[in-house]
Length: 239
Image (tube, rainbow, N blue to C red; front, side, top):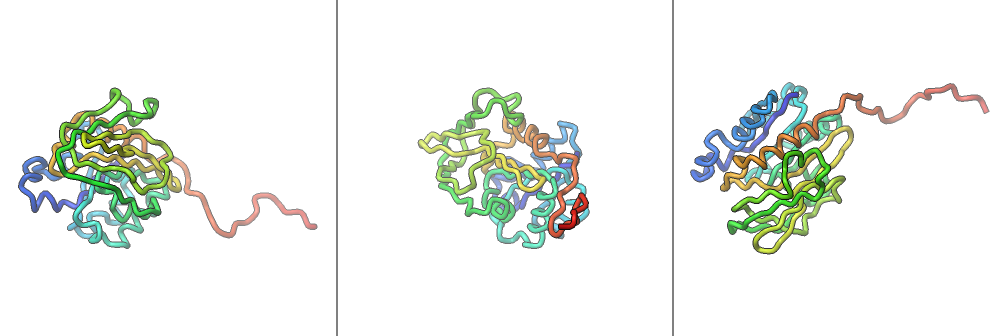
C-alpha cells in the first residue's frame, strides 16, 4: 500500500516554534510513524511542482493524508480536481485538523466546513463514541491531549456516515472530531487534532488513530462504475 502525506509546509518555514516541534515538517513526522507500520510512504508539499501531486504520484497513491492551514487558496483548482477524481475512483483520503477548510475537503463535503475556534491551550479529551470501529483499535475510552487548539460546534459538515470521536474542551465546547464519509468508491476520514504549535503528532495514541485510519480508507479492489448512456445487458423484446 502506497501512502502520500501532503502538507503545505509553510508554518515550519515561518515559525521557529513549529520548526522545533517538527524539524522534518509535519509531513515528515507523520510519514515517519507510518513507515514504522511497514507502509510505503512518500511526501508532497505545496511549493513543489503540481504541489507534489503529479499524475504519476496520484496514480500510485492508495491513501492521501492532507494537512493545510495558511495557504488553502494557493492550491491549484486543477490539482484539487485530480485529487477529487482519484477519491471518487477509490483512493482513500485522511484530512487532518485545519484541512477542514481545504478546497478538496469542501468540494467533497459540499458545505462551508466552518466552525468555532480558539487558541488558548485548552485540554482536549477525544471520546471514542464508536468502540466497534476499526479506527479505534488499540485506543481506550478516550485520548487526552494536554494542550490543543479548540474547535467547537457548529461544524458545518454533512452528517457523517460514521461518527467515531467527539471532543470535549476545557472551555466547555464539544466537537465532532472523527468522521468518516464515502464518496464514489473512496472513503474519507476527518480527524480533528493537530494544531501546528503543539506536539500532537508525536502522541502515540494520535499516531495509532492515523495508522488505523490508513488501513480503513485504503481502496477496495473493484472497478469504478460506468455511467451515462448504456447498452442493455439482456435482449429487449420487441413490443
